[in-house]
Length: 180
Image: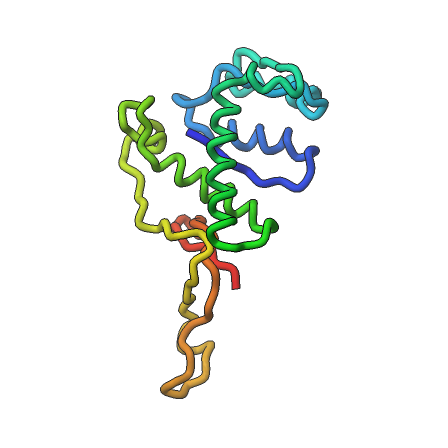
């Protein structure tokens, strides 16, 4: 199961790792955390990660991606999806963050041969993923605005044109993420 978090600076990595590990169910918590040898992974707060039942932290040499095979393969797979989404939709590179989140969601809902043709979502939550919210990244979308927000003429638009960026959660419910 993959989790993608978009952040602004490397200073946020400690908080992000803490938040992701605290939100992970006990039965799926990692026992080993692997990272490259970058300075942001050598802070006092990250040395305290064992409070989340992490038994070992492994650091690999920078620019030696072959030492961290599975993670690098996942990053490459997600990266290919992001590039394809941005090229196909003709969206500017500024939307890469939304593409990362959607590509990760698609990865988690896709069946994998290595998991016995099951999706990572199924292995984590023991139920089939709901893929009804997925649309083509960058497709045109009309967002219903409601009768109180629009003019009250027969031919007045009842919605606003936008661009589909993915799926989010609002008030405990799944919702479309649309840019207008």
